[in-house]
Image 1 (spheres, rainbow, N blue to C red):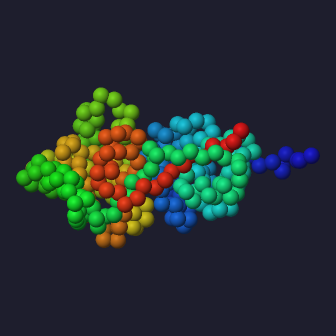
Image 2 (cartoon, rainbow, N blue to C red):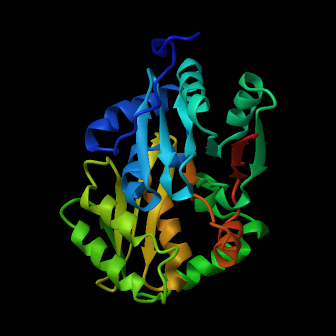
Image 3 (cartoon, helix red, strand yellow):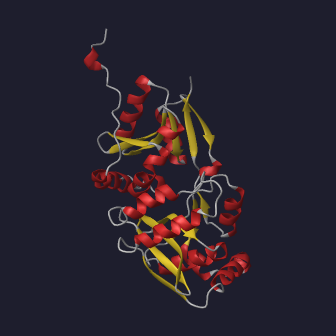
Amino acid sequence: MNNSSDVAQPLAFEPIIMSHKERIEEIRRTYGNTLYVYTFASLYAWQEDEQYEISFCDTAFIIKYGKKGDNAYLFPCGNDNGRKKLISRLLQYESPVFYSMTDEDKRFIENEYPDKFTFSQCRDEFPYLYDKAAQIELSGKTYKSLRHQINTGRAVAEKWSTEPLTDRNAERALAINEEWLKGYSFSTHADTHAAETALRNFSKLSMWGLIFQADGKDIAYVAGTFVTPEIFDICFCKVLDKRCDCFIKWALYCALPDETKTIDSEEDLGLEGLRRHKLLRQPKELTRIWKGSLNI
């Protein structure tokens, strides 16, 4: 008979707070997780909407994903030993469902817990990755349509200007948020609340971005985070004139540091128009994402 001391206690979860930033980022970067959803900026900005909570174990962490259900989690991030400890603790008390699993995560589960999980592919959650140099150069017939859209957007104004997005001008980006939302009759996919959280904590979250003006009037902003020095994630992009969307993104790419090679444009949420737009821009890769459900 087992003593109560031999049975691990259920995982304790807590809100994601600013003091977690260094630990989360160290774990994520040390163990090579490049999914944007695990960056501290994304977790912090989206935690209220997605009902995130966090639990740490050694050099690993796991995110409880309340919006998806009581037993829903982002797949653990960290070293193999820490991830196994977190998963094994969960298996003692519940039937977990894991989200945001890459092909590598799927192989890990299949090797460590054979025949215990069933997997389904989540096409709506595939992040779109773009080659920065190709997106700037736009060479050849492949980019003909995109070049046209960029030129159409550029022609909207006689004079364009940009400035770095900072804490000092974040209120202007917040005003763009509010104006942008007026164009929607519903806010199911309008990420303005998470964007507001990010903008109000911009420097604390180590974010980077630009504000765009067309003929002296604020028309767009882009805010994101560096997943690694080589990968920039576009977390939020709000453009008040839809004709300018491709031009705004092209101008952003031109302004990024030389060492940044890849743009993460996140997922399309299964929205037909958004998917067409992202595919039009010719991604170099779509990262496959899986959901893993415990067999009962």
